[in-house]
Image (cartoon, rainbow, N blue to C red):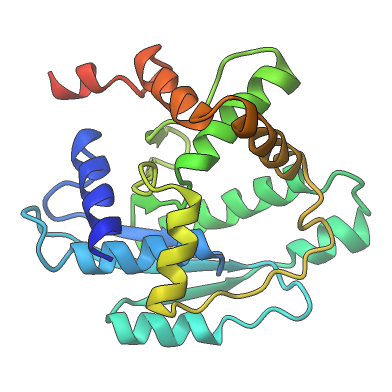
Length: 241
């Protein structure tokens, strides 16, 4: 956890993600990334110079076979309030509309439900579990599939919902996420979604694995390019002014 916390703290400070008095909600899907984000921020709040609180929100898509009770137990152990919101996303996407490419609609419905719950709770900051590899993959997907150089930002303000999204795991590589979750014995909720594991992102992961064999440290170079280019919202020099 010390290694993870050092990276999370540096990312939070580099991009001024947390202010005194914030309550940071963590969007917890049950996957390894969001669970580690929750555990890391819960620990960070105990010693970070700027005092902040943590809450956890799960949007339950009502996918058959999913059980979030381990997440509720983890939140109790971390002394973090937990909000579980049931939304019939699975039924809408797979039963009613029978989407052939369901991920986009699913993500849109999740975002809407999450914003609604944040507004209901009076919270205006949400931490998402996107990590180092997610940023690299998003950049490559944008270039190859859309013909543009783009990536999500470390900090994003959403005008419509008046919510700020932060991504404190951006300096943490996926292999370190896996290792930390295993060593800390954090609960991970398996996702039985029919589209799980058959997405363009999975294809991009495999492409990057192949490129790493021929061009060592290619992911490190792409991540560095995102910051040096810089893509909008990624410039460290602007953040440090």
